[in-house]
Image (tube, rainbow, N blue to C red; front, side, top):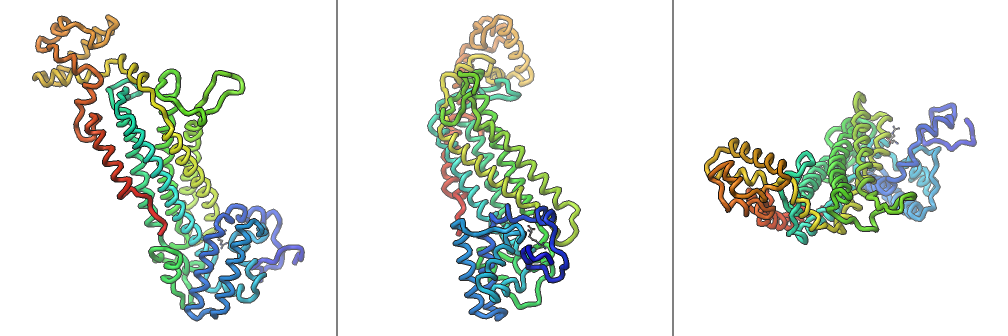
Length: 471
Ligand code: ARG
């Protein structure tokens, strides 16, 4: 065998050294080294369990744990030499351990396989990342509620089809996003229940003949339970797909919010001022202040959707149990985690600094007949069937369009021609405030309802919506 090559931990049956090309192609250490902490924790728990069960000696276990701790420090200090020839994070660490402590290190892999090892590492990693994301989303929600609370007096046009529809409170609009992120957090927490299952001890695929104690290792590692089927445990990646699906929805919601921030900060809308510190200029057009942050969040959404598709496709058609294809799960997962995390964080910071422009939003309420529905509802209260009322108000709008005026500018004499039941009281209902305040149905935009919604949201953030703690 080519003696310039690193000896493989699995090299016993091989007569030829691995081609460089193959080493390059199969190596994962350049990305899975990110799991070094989880890998070392898993190995320490495994070694302690082996000793407790009398499978290795206490002295060996102590040497292993001390050796792994020393390696951990080396990695954290940036002194550890990662070797592509050792393929992945597991064998890099195991080899370093053997070099340090000799035969005790060679005993660590008893009753274990890289197949259950990697499944355990990724689950440990994802558990921590979900908790972190939950915390970031909590901050974003807090920003939304405090904006809503601070600016409870702003009325703005609500839109459907991006056409002015009915007046709403700006706070009501912000709380719509609060609800989206509430569901996102609920989904992530639900996903966490299934991530929180320990595969360690499933070994390569069939379990092991050694008298291991899987419940002990699971407990040591902070898992709530052990997986039930060894084949499933080493080949299941649907927990990653669930996470990517939940992460995709987080991005979808961030992207909708981003789109609105881009629209609102345009001169055409001019509803908000984005802080200078969150915008960039143009290298050619001196007047420009571009909303790059929300644009990038919107743009990054596609990446996360792509990772979800990649992961779904990855497991489709895989026979039981572990297949090397599964190594492809990690780069997409890591990138999705980084992308959604960074996007939520920056959006939380941006939302906290948003400055709504009250007058501009109110100006926008002056045109577009936003209180037409209120007019129709008024007629309904006088006994006119809704469809008839709709028709009458439609005619009033046509009249306004013809004259170039708004509904409240039509004289009472003209209105009475449309329906003799109409009286002066109508005008009070045609104001944006009158319209907003009349909408007291559950979940509606009347200020009394929105204030209650703000209180509920604040309560939730302190109770069920409190960030999940690690322990
Ligand atoms: N690097 C591998 C992965 O990410 C670790 C498990 C390798 N197992 C194996 N039998 N080659 O999936």
